[in-house]
Length: 547
Picture: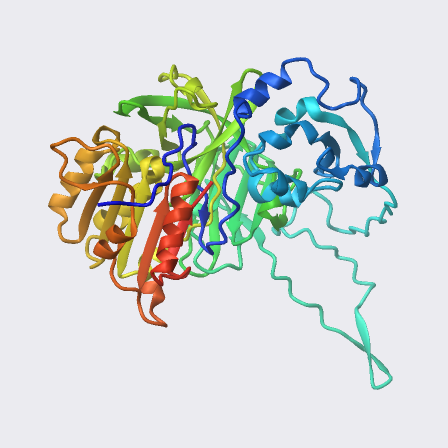
């Protein structure tokens, strides 16, 4: 069976993870010239060349001056409104191409940067291009409003730090009369607290229906610093407190569809009545977009490292004591490693220890996670993982992604197309729909593309599941380098394969009954989505996982 020629998996491609449910797929990765890889950029930074073009002197840059440097031969950029970098020497090293990076030159490009590079350490990546701090012009300082009665001491049972100044009453003119305007009820989340002899309960009113336990990240330091983040749609709500007394344990209790969440804190000294919950710390009671939220970096202990194939390993990692984070299906963490003095970050989808359900996993729910990583000999980050063993430490961030597992509930038929380590987001989708929800009559099909049979991840487990769960679960393999004994498809995924395996596109109004998930190297994912659209499958049916 012939197929269009596309290059996958790219030799140095990192695993792809970020999801794009709307199919607004970002620009493709542009082929770089020889000698323009990330490792080449790292070496250039260590060469001693004056990449900033300032002769080693730090200079203050005004917004007016920044705006003058907006050409390819003279490209400056500001990140976070604080630091200015000379991007001219980096342009040819940018995987997204020169036009993409030119969109942000001559100005503060934080929004553009966060669209695709939120997890990149700009200070490390562009350290040698640093020109100096950005000096803002025409900044008007606002007078802080009175906070009578609010303060930071939460000695009342409300976590909402409202002003109690009642002297000002909003009013409006109606037919010549001044009438009071009733205050609008805030739709922001809030929290209260109460206690008994053993437990302090923080009740969080998220105002979002169907909050899931995966939407909550808890961190407790030294038994007193409590930090909770609630992922609520496009925004995050944070509670950050120095508790008034020590606690020994924390637990989440969900309240169905109401949007109310209880955080149960076990008192270390039972019977002691708290007079206040604690003091608000930086970021407490904040509710802001995800892109404005600082990501967290944790040192995670490696519990085990197991071989999956000849060049792929499964890492089991444990979060630091006091951290509870349950990663949603189809989401990923970012791992940061030091590569020749530069901090390099890569996304990796969180997987499972096995396709089989193991009850013992619940013991470590929210505490341990698994990463399946292909090690590329010529890669930038993955070669540093080859010597990692149990007991070592890996630096990871909190999760990101926008895949909603409610799509799995809506769909009657699920079709997954994966290439190489693009199989990783499919692992939890398969277990959820085939094994954990075995009573649901959903047909799940997996089309799995690889170079050789030996590259197929968990082939034995997949085949066993296909045998035991047939006809609900079916798998189709294709390889580009086959042997005489090979019995699956041969060649790259093509239109003929899709026509043979996929059901016809659903009629209007029933599009959500079909779910097609696609993941692999960027070239593969773009090509598959393009073919699917040519076959009349729409964005309502397709979810592309990209990074």
